[in-house]
Image (spheres, each protein chain N blue to C red):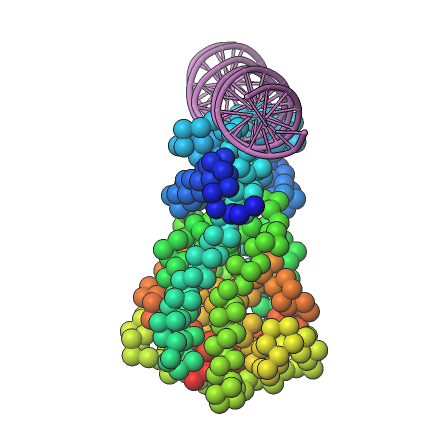
Length: 229
Length: 229
DNA sequence: ACACATTCGAGAGCAGTGCTCTTGCATTGG
DNA sequence: CCAATGCAAGAGCACTGCTCTCGAATGTGT
């Protein structure tokens, strides 16, 4: 039952599985999710399409695997960028994470579209994607929590109608933060992907030309909105 | 050469074209863009698939028509919501537009995905979509411009690296506004769609539960960011 | 009013897709 | 060594977008 040397059979299986994912990722990056074809993957790997179903029961399952990988790849890039400035002020760490997410998205447009664009046809994200999908968000929470412990943060007061929900979110996400800050943080988290998506999907064409400084300024404003200076 | 009564042929043509778009929109709303099939549309209309190519040279052209319609539908909803509170304070008009966009998106998820989600395979939005796509943005600009003429707006100062680009954007979009406000406005515009997209595509699942008040608060914060009170 | 031109629907057909099922071979564990 | 299992292959089904050709209906110019 050890994981290594469990027989040539098992080793071949994980190798083939990896090869399929690699080739699929190649095609995804080259042509986009819509043009990812099981048959083309199989063809490129020198096998017949039906053989592929031994490894992934359906095209959607293959996509799910690629989605998780994409979340992890993005999360890893964000964490690496964060760790490189781990000792800087929280606002700088925040910006580093946001900029890393943008750079990753620009470098992996189709994979970004897969995870933050429109969901595929009748596709329903399985629970397994959740931990990978949460990595960037958790990183932002950590930064804000550190900042709060350092100096205490403030955010605009909550309207009465949001009070209860904000407190629920707070206990679920970061019990040691004020609810106003948590609400602002979650909103900023979503807004960040609005900025990235608009740039990536061409909505800024003929509107914003010099996009990097624009993005930097925008995420700095987002940081300010949750109380980071 | 008059547009009306230009012969039975021409009239039939625009009628069939409309019928195709209607049926396509039905299938789009029901199943999503990925499952929109020319053959299925033709089948439902009692014609053969090849006949459809007399009206739309390709599936992508049909999608383009639907995209423009979707932009217009969203723009119309936003403008109607705005006009209903046209005399209120700018901040209230801003919120009305944002909330109308959200409601439209929740009511037309697949059409929203078509215009603000990932672009389809090798699809490149033709110039023809631009005016329709700009409607909500122009509305927000109008609101902010009105507010500025009323009382003068302020936004956080620009970093030096963004100065030139912000001034370029200002002359292109709203020459009578300060560049800081224009930069904030464009960012807020993109961020709005981050909020909507996250809710629509399920990213808020198990994070934000009571989403309407959350959204209201978030767009109020966005309004504050461009100087609206 | 007649002849020419254009437009259109239908059908066949091509190349491709996801997916299923059966068949026979190779590897594996007892 | 032999039975059980894992696996690749092939054929096949029901689709897809798209092209081409062929008559028929509908226009238009003389």
